[in-house]
Image 1 (cartoon, rainbow, N blue to C red):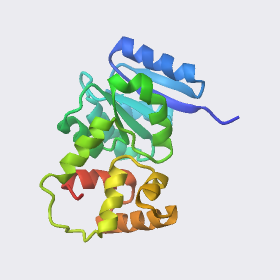
Image 2 (spheres, helix red, strand yellow):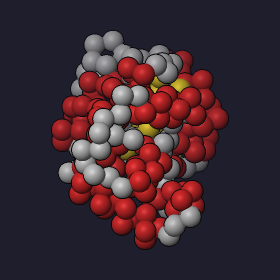
Image 3 (cartoon, rainbow, N blue to C red):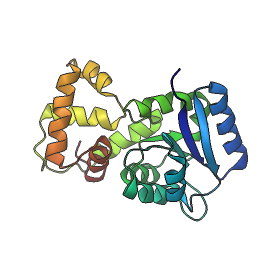
Image 4 (spheres, rainbow, N blue to C red):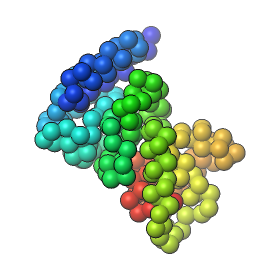
Length: 211
Protein backbone atom coordinates (compact mmCIF):
# COMPACT_ATOMS: atom_id res chain seq x y z
CA UNK A 1 0.00 0.00 0.00
CA UNK A 2 1.55 3.34 -1.04
CA UNK A 3 2.37 5.90 1.62
CA UNK A 4 -0.19 8.70 1.91
CA UNK A 5 0.60 12.08 0.39
CA UNK A 6 1.27 14.62 3.14
CA UNK A 7 -0.39 18.04 2.80
CA UNK A 8 0.00 21.29 4.73
CA UNK A 9 -2.69 23.95 4.27
CA UNK A 10 -2.37 27.72 4.72
CA UNK A 11 -5.77 29.43 4.39
CA UNK A 12 -7.22 32.24 6.52
CA UNK A 13 -10.87 31.61 5.57
CA UNK A 14 -12.13 29.13 8.17
CA UNK A 15 -14.98 27.71 6.08
CA UNK A 16 -12.83 27.28 2.99
CA UNK A 17 -10.07 25.67 5.02
CA UNK A 18 -12.59 23.22 6.44
CA UNK A 19 -13.85 22.45 2.93
CA UNK A 20 -10.30 21.80 1.73
CA UNK A 21 -9.63 19.41 4.62
CA UNK A 22 -12.88 17.57 3.96
CA UNK A 23 -12.14 17.29 0.23
CA UNK A 24 -8.64 15.95 0.88
CA UNK A 25 -9.68 13.47 3.55
CA UNK A 26 -12.59 12.11 1.50
CA UNK A 27 -10.19 11.19 -1.30
CA UNK A 28 -8.46 8.68 0.95
CA UNK A 29 -5.09 9.48 -0.64
CA UNK A 30 -3.97 12.39 1.51
CA UNK A 31 -3.08 13.15 5.10
CA UNK A 32 -3.34 16.79 6.19
CA UNK A 33 -0.32 17.12 8.47
CA UNK A 34 -1.28 20.59 9.63
CA UNK A 35 -3.44 23.60 8.86
CA UNK A 36 -2.74 27.28 9.47
CA UNK A 37 -4.86 30.43 9.30
CA UNK A 38 -1.81 32.60 8.53
CA UNK A 39 1.70 32.27 7.12
CA UNK A 40 3.63 34.11 9.81
CA UNK A 41 5.68 31.03 10.72
CA UNK A 42 5.52 29.28 7.36
CA UNK A 43 9.19 28.29 7.20
CA UNK A 44 9.15 26.72 10.66
CA UNK A 45 5.86 24.99 9.82
CA UNK A 46 7.31 23.39 6.67
CA UNK A 47 10.40 22.26 8.57
CA UNK A 48 8.23 20.56 11.18
CA UNK A 49 5.47 19.20 8.93
CA UNK A 50 7.70 17.95 6.09
CA UNK A 51 4.75 17.89 3.64
CA UNK A 52 4.87 16.65 0.07
CA UNK A 53 2.58 19.46 -1.05
CA UNK A 54 1.70 22.87 0.40
CA UNK A 55 -1.61 24.56 -0.43
CA UNK A 56 -1.00 28.27 0.05
CA UNK A 57 -3.61 31.02 0.01
CA UNK A 58 -2.08 33.98 -1.80
CA UNK A 59 -3.89 36.72 0.13
CA UNK A 60 -3.56 36.39 3.91
CA UNK A 61 -3.26 39.07 6.60
CA UNK A 62 0.27 39.81 7.73
CA UNK A 63 2.64 37.65 5.69
CA UNK A 64 1.11 37.11 2.25
CA UNK A 65 1.28 33.79 0.43
CA UNK A 66 3.83 35.15 -2.05
CA UNK A 67 6.08 36.40 0.77
CA UNK A 68 5.76 33.02 2.51
CA UNK A 69 6.75 31.14 -0.65
CA UNK A 70 9.84 33.33 -1.07
CA UNK A 71 10.92 32.55 2.49
CA UNK A 72 10.24 28.83 2.11
CA UNK A 73 12.25 28.67 -1.12
CA UNK A 74 15.35 30.07 0.57
CA UNK A 75 15.66 26.84 2.54
CA UNK A 76 13.46 24.37 0.66
CA UNK A 77 13.43 23.98 -3.13
CA UNK A 78 11.72 20.60 -3.32
CA UNK A 79 8.37 20.86 -1.50
CA UNK A 80 5.64 21.39 -4.08
CA UNK A 81 3.57 24.55 -3.55
CA UNK A 82 0.18 25.22 -5.14
CA UNK A 83 -1.24 28.72 -4.73
CA UNK A 84 -4.98 28.93 -4.06
CA UNK A 85 -6.57 32.27 -4.84
CA UNK A 86 -9.53 34.25 -6.10
CA UNK A 87 -7.16 36.46 -8.10
CA UNK A 88 -6.44 35.85 -11.78
CA UNK A 89 -4.65 39.09 -12.61
CA UNK A 90 -1.15 39.26 -14.07
CA UNK A 91 0.55 40.78 -11.04
CA UNK A 92 -0.55 38.11 -8.56
CA UNK A 93 0.06 35.25 -10.99
CA UNK A 94 3.53 36.32 -12.08
CA UNK A 95 4.63 37.25 -8.57
CA UNK A 96 3.55 33.86 -7.24
CA UNK A 97 5.29 31.91 -10.01
CA UNK A 98 8.45 34.02 -9.75
CA UNK A 99 8.51 33.45 -5.98
CA UNK A 100 8.74 29.72 -6.60
CA UNK A 101 5.17 28.40 -6.65
CA UNK A 102 4.72 25.20 -8.66
CA UNK A 103 1.06 25.72 -9.53
CA UNK A 104 -1.70 28.32 -9.36
CA UNK A 105 -5.32 27.29 -8.93
CA UNK A 106 -8.34 29.60 -8.77
CA UNK A 107 -10.52 28.85 -5.75
CA UNK A 108 -13.64 28.59 -7.88
CA UNK A 109 -12.11 25.47 -9.49
CA UNK A 110 -10.87 23.87 -6.25
CA UNK A 111 -13.63 21.28 -5.85
CA UNK A 112 -13.14 20.01 -9.41
CA UNK A 113 -9.41 20.46 -9.93
CA UNK A 114 -7.59 20.19 -6.58
CA UNK A 115 -6.99 16.43 -6.47
CA UNK A 116 -5.79 16.30 -10.08
CA UNK A 117 -3.61 19.37 -9.47
CA UNK A 118 -1.87 17.70 -6.53
CA UNK A 119 -1.15 14.59 -8.61
CA UNK A 120 0.06 16.74 -11.49
CA UNK A 121 2.47 18.79 -9.40
CA UNK A 122 3.90 15.62 -7.83
CA UNK A 123 4.55 14.16 -11.27
CA UNK A 124 6.55 17.18 -12.42
CA UNK A 125 3.82 19.36 -13.90
CA UNK A 126 2.82 22.91 -13.05
CA UNK A 127 -0.97 22.87 -12.66
CA UNK A 128 -2.90 26.05 -13.26
CA UNK A 129 -6.37 27.09 -14.30
CA UNK A 130 -6.82 27.55 -18.07
CA UNK A 131 -7.35 31.31 -17.75
CA UNK A 132 -4.14 31.61 -15.72
CA UNK A 133 -2.14 29.60 -18.28
CA UNK A 134 -3.43 31.83 -21.09
CA UNK A 135 -2.52 34.92 -19.08
CA UNK A 136 1.02 33.74 -18.49
CA UNK A 137 1.56 32.93 -22.16
CA UNK A 138 0.10 36.29 -23.16
CA UNK A 139 2.43 38.04 -20.75
CA UNK A 140 5.40 36.09 -22.05
CA UNK A 141 4.64 37.18 -25.60
CA UNK A 142 4.42 40.88 -24.72
CA UNK A 143 7.59 42.88 -25.21
CA UNK A 144 9.64 39.77 -25.87
CA UNK A 145 13.36 40.70 -25.93
CA UNK A 146 15.95 39.62 -28.44
CA UNK A 147 16.95 36.03 -27.91
CA UNK A 148 19.87 36.79 -25.62
CA UNK A 149 20.10 33.16 -24.53
CA UNK A 150 20.24 31.81 -28.09
CA UNK A 151 17.40 29.33 -27.63
CA UNK A 152 16.52 27.37 -30.75
CA UNK A 153 12.95 27.42 -32.08
CA UNK A 154 12.35 23.94 -30.66
CA UNK A 155 13.82 24.92 -27.29
CA UNK A 156 11.50 27.93 -27.19
CA UNK A 157 8.52 25.68 -27.97
CA UNK A 158 9.61 23.29 -25.22
CA UNK A 159 10.04 26.12 -22.70
CA UNK A 160 6.62 27.54 -23.55
CA UNK A 161 4.96 24.14 -23.04
CA UNK A 162 6.89 23.71 -19.79
CA UNK A 163 5.63 27.11 -18.60
CA UNK A 164 2.07 26.03 -19.38
CA UNK A 165 2.42 23.22 -16.86
CA UNK A 166 2.87 20.30 -19.25
CA UNK A 167 4.73 17.19 -18.11
CA UNK A 168 7.68 15.88 -20.14
CA UNK A 169 5.40 13.19 -21.58
CA UNK A 170 2.81 15.79 -22.65
CA UNK A 171 5.51 17.98 -24.22
CA UNK A 172 6.78 14.98 -26.17
CA UNK A 173 3.27 14.21 -27.43
CA UNK A 174 2.63 17.84 -28.39
CA UNK A 175 5.91 18.17 -30.30
CA UNK A 176 5.88 14.57 -31.59
CA UNK A 177 9.26 13.77 -30.06
CA UNK A 178 10.45 11.17 -27.53
CA UNK A 179 10.71 11.86 -23.80
CA UNK A 180 14.50 11.44 -24.08
CA UNK A 181 14.55 14.20 -26.70
CA UNK A 182 12.40 16.39 -24.42
CA UNK A 183 14.89 15.82 -21.61
CA UNK A 184 17.75 16.77 -23.94
CA UNK A 185 16.02 20.02 -24.93
CA UNK A 186 15.27 20.86 -21.30
CA UNK A 187 18.86 20.11 -20.25
CA UNK A 188 20.09 22.55 -22.91
CA UNK A 189 17.50 25.14 -21.85
CA UNK A 190 18.73 24.88 -18.24
CA UNK A 191 22.34 25.29 -19.42
CA UNK A 192 21.54 28.32 -21.60
CA UNK A 193 19.40 30.03 -18.96
CA UNK A 194 21.89 29.08 -16.24
CA UNK A 195 19.20 27.52 -14.04
CA UNK A 196 18.97 24.19 -12.25
CA UNK A 197 15.27 23.38 -12.12
CA UNK A 198 11.90 23.66 -13.85
CA UNK A 199 10.80 26.27 -11.30
CA UNK A 200 13.81 28.48 -12.03
CA UNK A 201 13.46 28.04 -15.80
CA UNK A 202 9.76 28.97 -15.82
CA UNK A 203 10.31 31.88 -13.43
CA UNK A 204 13.11 33.25 -15.61
CA UNK A 205 11.03 32.79 -18.76
CA UNK A 206 8.13 34.70 -17.18
CA UNK A 207 10.24 37.47 -15.65
CA UNK A 208 12.34 38.06 -18.76
CA UNK A 209 9.57 37.27 -21.29
CA UNK A 210 11.76 34.80 -23.13
CA UNK A 211 9.06 32.93 -25.04
